[in-house]
Image (cartoon, rainbow, N blue to C red; front, side):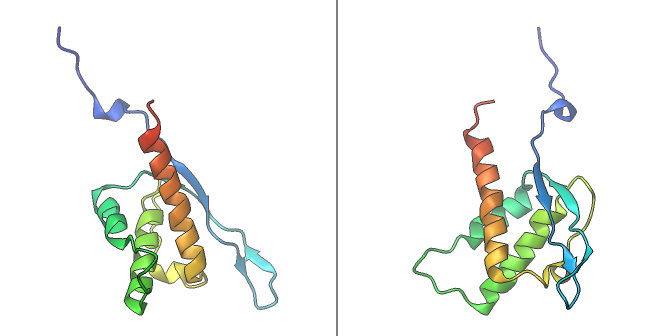
Length: 117
């Protein structure tokens, strides 16, 4: 007996993520950070992540920082909220924050790869 496989019934896992709060010049919160439900990377994003892997001996360049912001925007735009996150939306994020977010996302992706279920 042949059993049908339905891609629409695959159990999905998501990464809850909260954007930074928007603050005024006095540090007062004007708007709470939007909550996103980020999906696993699709092929294009996964390939971009692999291209970005820089060894510790490599010196990051301005081109690398542009790539980090573009990659982060692509990762965060792949969300269930259907919100497009542009590089301009990440202007208040410094490069350390961006790399920490991407590192946390990769931990999420790696945990799923090692999970037998």
